[in-house]
Length: 351
Image (cartoon, rainbow, N blue to C red; front, side, top):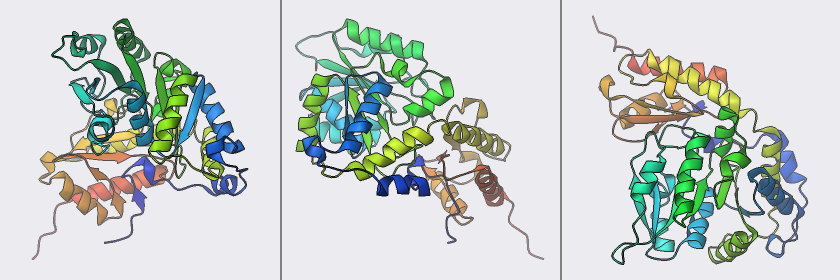
């Protein structure tokens, strides 16, 4: 198996740039648990301002952001409304049930986006036989939806339904800044209707670790309790918070390059025999396509591609995902397309 030259498995595969490493090395540090790490404090203030919230909390991962938000907003036995494709349902190892004891009402949206009508239908009427609906959940962009950007109008509408029923709202913003760059809508505008929201530094922003959860001061005070309980409290965490600050300074606007590369990848794949993809659906940096008509399943396709030095991810029996990011440039996209063509080339016949 040759070395992987073009890694499109996920935008989590990025490595810190040389300049980011220097920022990490030069970071001022202190005891984060005591509020004495100046770099962590600056990052929290920066994210709170970015998302238009009163306060923010630096955490090791986006999954911890989600799980702490669930703990603060819900009690065991409560129900959460979310799209069926949501990361919190599919990729957090059952933590909502394990940690918070909640259930989900999974909505069948369109490419990860559901409507106010969907939300209204999913919220329980309040019978004593029903689990209480306590939280409405939005993931923007939608990962399994294909990197879909939620239109601000729909975000506002679904949150208004929840607010009218006395239900809290949470924004999983793992790739929120991709949505911001793609749509031109500010992060604060997207986050405004939500009681809590977070952004990730380890995906398109290229930091090695960390995410930041934001909300009211009361929400963050309670979140700190669960951060401590779940083992997320740190000490001299400025060395990793510095990467987040650097990413916000230098890696946000360049997300547009990833979106261009994703569209180019989709357009190149669309002309290959047996590949089912509509390039017009590619809004950000996630490219999903179907390989059923190639005669291979997703695992076989990914394995064959790996033989040509390109890595993607199998996301179902025939569904494959490729994710563009700062470590893959335009030349890397062309190399990935060449590998795809080689995988699909007819086997040579002997004479």
